[in-house]
Image (cartoon, rainbow, N blue to C red):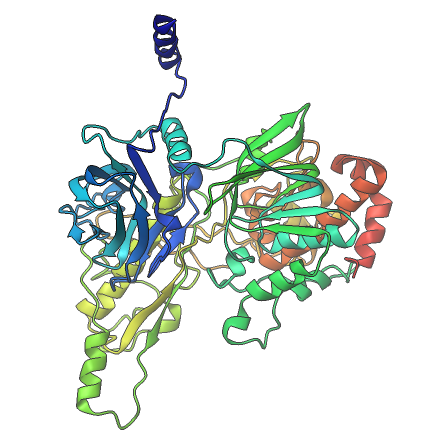
Length: 611
């Protein structure tokens, strides 16, 4: 029987099956995002599908951040080999300076290598062999403040072993090493399951709940709001309350702060959370990432999500589903038909800003000197070399004060020729290279901002175009320009057809791609408003119980320029919630709402979201 077991194991390996057996006496794994104290390190959850996990990033904007710290109890003291999963994030751009360097401190020992210095891709960097006490402290110690990143740390008693690298084997190794349960938590059955807590997804969840549906709302960040939240800080665009459905937008107004809001109240995080928590029919699941989707006969029957911090998985069963997330993770996993341009698409942004160090008018020379020293910024040879190139905010003449309001605005975009899914992290990092290169040029080349500092930059990327799920109707730019009327017109479009193409006037040296978009509106981007986008673009053509919301809606890229405006997507969510309520009352599919119950849907659109 022993020989049979060995033979079976060899057969499984040759067949490509995942074989991982973690001995917890021999292996200790630490997930960086689960450290007890994260210090100044930011949690990045955007690229889980590509690299397997959230990770910590030293987001110090050129100033080293405070240590991330956790206490660890090892099964035994003695010698252990240490492995750190990390990457050198500028190496994929042909740079070898490794700006994101950090150290690992285990107890009183600082491991000899600096991490984040070796390879462009995520990999296990060898930290060598060290002696460890049973109870000790582990620290991530940032050296630069320039976006060093750490996914996980593995200690192995077998000093000749190393963790697996292939995605499937690593996922199973991670599950066993972290003692994540194999079976999901059954969260129950819902009428509607919404994936994505941006304005569109939140509006869909609340709209459906107020019509009596039981709703689960999943979001992969700790706050609601998506690109409008305090994490990204975009302003909501687009107009609501358009005739003949002038009540559409009431819920959007309820979810967004008024224009006079200041401070933290400018962003909708708390306001949206309060609205959701007041709805007894909504259960909110923050920090949940969709992993698997169960489909039968062309319909979704359940999805599984992973809590990005605890590692636990949950299973949600629903009658209808909404995909409101950029990249359409739910729809793609369900097998929904979609379109994706790998190049020539709209650029993605990472907003950033600077601020002046405030000094009293009677500040002493010492105070002014200390302020200037506090505003110093390191040289960035690994960033875009903009030392002698134009960029928004940079004066054409020497000695003129920069226009600081234009630095980091939403024209700063990257990734026009990169794959928005496969290269998502690289696109974000190219935005960072433009930001650091511009600030290096102003601070160190021109010395034009002696009392200004980089104040803030988003970790999250503003995605304008990714996978677009296909519905029974695909909205085109010609639809809007010609003012085509649709009997099922349901979503008012008022924003120009902004396609955010690269501006050749702004490009890096040595043939680097453009990092700024052409400002809109361009010729042909305007139309008679409002254009009412058809309801048929809001559900999947081949997954019968899937609604589409946000930038994954069924539209060609040009039309998406208008449909992606934030307030427009909020109204889109309101419409989906009301349509889902008709599905429940009529026991029908989203398509059948159009074919058989369109008059009833129009009545709901006239009334607006129930209060």
